[in-house]
Amino acid sequence: MPDAMPAMISLPFITIFIVHALLVTCTKDTLDLRRSDSNGTDIILAGAQNTSHPILLSSDGAYAWQFFSRNGDLTKRLLVVLRVLFNTSIVVWIANRDHPASPDASLLLELPLRRLTLRERNGAVVWSPAAVNISSIVMNTNGSLHILGEAGALQWQSFDEPADVLVPGQYLLTNHTATSSISVTDWTTGFYTLKADPGGMVLYATFDAQQTMIPYQIFNYIRENDTIASSLYSNCNHTIIIYDKDGSGITLEQSGTVTPQCLAENNGVPTINGVFFPNRIGNDSGYRFLRISPIGDLVTFYISNFTGLVQDNELFRVFYNTYCKFPSYCGAYGLCSSIQNCSCPQLFEAIDPSDPTQGCQRQTPLNCSNFEHHQFLQVPGTDYYANDYLTPQKVVQDPTECTNLCLQSCSCSAAFYNNNTGACHLYDQLRTMQYLANPNVIAFLRVTSLPGTGQSDKMVIRNQVRVTP
Ligand SMILES: *[C@@H]1O[C@H](CO)[C@@H](O)[C@H](O)[C@H]1NC(C)=O
Ligand SMILES: *[C@@H]1O[C@H](CO)[C@@H](O)[C@H](O)[C@H]1NC(C)=O
Ligand SMILES: *[C@@H]1O[C@H](CO)[C@@H](O)[C@H](O)[C@H]1NC(C)=O
Ligand SMILES: *[C@@H]1O[C@H](CO)[C@@H](O)[C@H](O)[C@H]1NC(C)=O
Ligand SMILES: *[C@@H]1O[C@H](CO)[C@@H](O)[C@H](O)[C@H]1NC(C)=O
Ligand SMILES: *[C@@H]1O[C@H](CO)[C@@H](O)[C@H](O)[C@H]1NC(C)=O
Ligand SMILES: *[C@@H]1O[C@H](CO)[C@@H](O)[C@H](O)[C@H]1NC(C)=O
Ligand SMILES: *[C@@H]1O[C@H](CO)[C@@H](O)[C@H](O)[C@H]1NC(C)=O
Ligand SMILES: *[C@@H]1O[C@H](CO)[C@@H](O)[C@H](O)[C@H]1NC(C)=O
Ligand SMILES: *[C@@H]1O[C@H](CO)[C@@H](O)[C@H](O)[C@H]1NC(C)=O
Ligand SMILES: *[C@@H]1O[C@H](CO)[C@@H](O)[C@H](O)[C@H]1NC(C)=O
Ligand SMILES: *[C@@H]1O[C@H](CO)[C@@H](O)[C@H](O)[C@H]1NC(C)=O
Picture 1 (tube, rainbow, N blue to C red):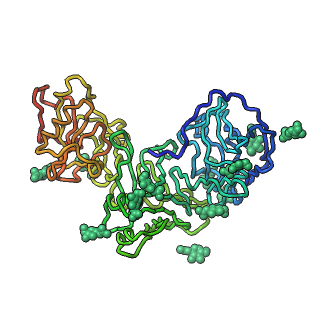
Picture 2 (picture 1 turned 180 degrees about the vertical axis):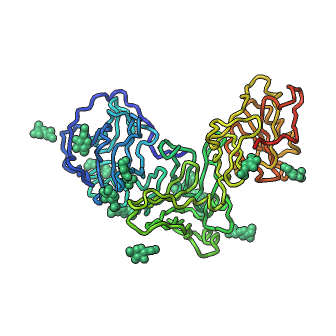
């Protein structure tokens, strides 16, 4: 998965920093670093343990750039947060998302390159944006953190490297991504990625090596031909996704020269398309955001002193009128039926009975001994999000050929057979299955043995295995 953050680089030889503490008495929106002469030593701008004060605060007081940690977490992340409601801090950007810093890490202006670096005491680089000769750093009122180089030229901005939130006016450049967090409270990179692809915006899921960047939802230029392919293989090579300044919608724009091929795709005319949000709440001094939610939807929400935090759009849930189209709404091996009904297949049990969306596990775990004699629980009419987008393992004559392929590998956990196309898909790990969503697809879940049958030499497919409600 593309990762906006630089990898951890260990510099074992740099162990001592002679530094001069500098600046910041009352919080301003700009760090002016032009005259910070420290005779060649690095300059500490902030210590990671200092989570009580912003390093920078936008001039209207709304956005703060500061270190933060979740409740009970000692490690620190460097964030841009909305602080308009004093009780609430909406995280709109994260520097070191997957690399929490220890409390004794420091944010430094490193000389002689005049580079911004978040560095551990032992020298390891946690985060360092691509900017040198830095003259100032500004927290803007629109939520973008700017790093300016010589003569005030913009060298880097947080809007170019979104985490999971877009604020109004923010954009996703071609081939750039924004990726969900594990949960609203765990900011670690999660499973779902929004990417500005050549023909539109595409949501991808990543769970494991087999299921990496699998597209599961698109919004492209050519709305009547709503296929993944029309977006991924479009002749329009310059999509940019813009979250409209007033938060009223998403616009897909051409960001470069419009080629004749692209124009042809668009019936000669439109190169701009978008999603408009109909259900906007309020008209007060609130703040609106777009988040790639932990379950993989595009969600808009609104916050103000009057309304508190309000979620007002779930784009694709509304589009499909079901949660079952989300790759993992019911967790691993969960069956999703109706609109948002999660249950476990027979011979599986809920991981957390009080929360069916946590998924299911086998009552008897699989192991690799005797694996060629495992059996299959058949769940007719049950499809899987990745079947639409992954090339089948093989096109086969009958379901037995498909399950036999699965039996050959100890790691294969489930097979899907499409009796219309003969497509046979095999998976080592499953997320949520779409129960009774496609009469042509049959799910075969591998189990050590089916009830009422012993281990036998021949694979057994029982036609009437029901699914536990
Ligand atoms: C830099 O060195 C000069 C000469 O030694 C000294 O006068 C000056 O105070 C030093 N500046 C800083 C910021 O330490
Ligand atoms: C925390 O940061 C604020 C603002 O930069 C500063 O005034 C304060 O002294 C810092 N506190 C500590 C313990 O470093
Ligand atoms: C929201 O309420 C806080 C606390 O009362 C106040 O400080 C802040 O200015 C208010 N913000 C807006 C935008 O009204
Ligand atoms: C802020 O927190 C305080 C104390 O927890 C609570 O009394 C108050 O209602 C909260 N305000 C808002 C706007 O949530
Ligand atoms: C940074 O400053 C140095 C010294 O003035 C200069 O040689 C270099 O070209 C500058 N680099 C950039 C990217 O501005
Ligand atoms: C955000 O605000 C800054 C300062 O006003 C401005 O330079 C920048 O263009 C704005 N960004 C966007 C995307 O509008
Ligand atoms: C986007 O990525 C593709 C594949 O790596 C590349 O061919 C294309 O040039 C990129 N487009 C832009 C605008 O970066
Ligand atoms: C789009 O980009 C791809 C890869 O960079 C390139 O092969 C193709 O010719 C481009 N299409 C158009 C219409 O420019
Ligand atoms: C959209 O689909 C229709 C029917 O499949 C086809 O005739 C048309 O050419 C497609 N349009 C584009 C722009 O691909
Ligand atoms: C929002 O408020 C402004 C000024 O108060 C008004 O001009 C505008 O028509 C309102 N918009 C809506 C959609 O109510
Ligand atoms: C395909 O399977 C479904 C049940 O999953 C069944 O209703 C349908 O009749 C089957 N079609 C064929 C051609 O076998
Ligand atoms: C939920 O799904 C189960 C089967 O998975 C079904 O038996 C049950 O009736 C469904 N409940 C609702 C409310 O749809």
